[in-house]
Picture 1 (cartoon, rainbow, N blue to C red):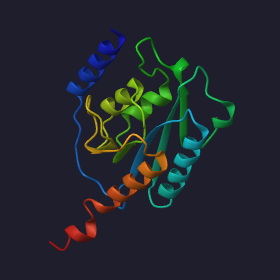
Picture 2 (picture 1 turned 45 degrees about the horizontal axis):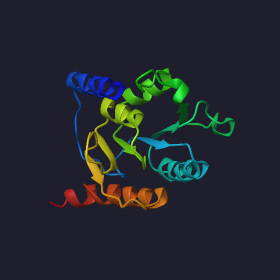
Picture 3 (picture 1 turned 30 degrees about the vertical axis):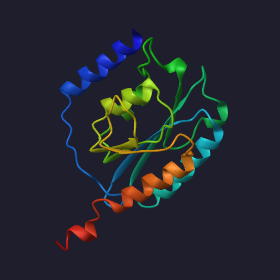
Length: 181
């Protein structure tokens, strides 16, 4: 029942949302948001590396990590451009209630990248509520909030998924090719 109420809230938010959808290349993106499951420290390290690579060319890069525990571990705290939250920061049906997470979900990123490898309502809520112009994530049956989905085998690592996302976002809608047409 809680999930039905949660997905109803996403649907209600989307009805009132005016989002300008556009396929955006990594080279032309001015702002990128990244969401990921920060429960495993090794995943945090991979995303931090990805963040550092993007920060070299993209003006605004923000990272949102969910720790599937009561509290965010202290070694995750105070990381610049990283917002980390835990179960304690969700309401009874799984909607984020902290202002930082709400601000992230409302920010009009050029690209929103969902790097989660498992289904979790909180990521559906944020992706579904986001006014980002181009949303990217892994393929899943339903619900679908991403504009571009990448089909992954179950055994694929986060590191490989990041490589795929980077490769696709560098390849699609390349400005140097469209100017020659």
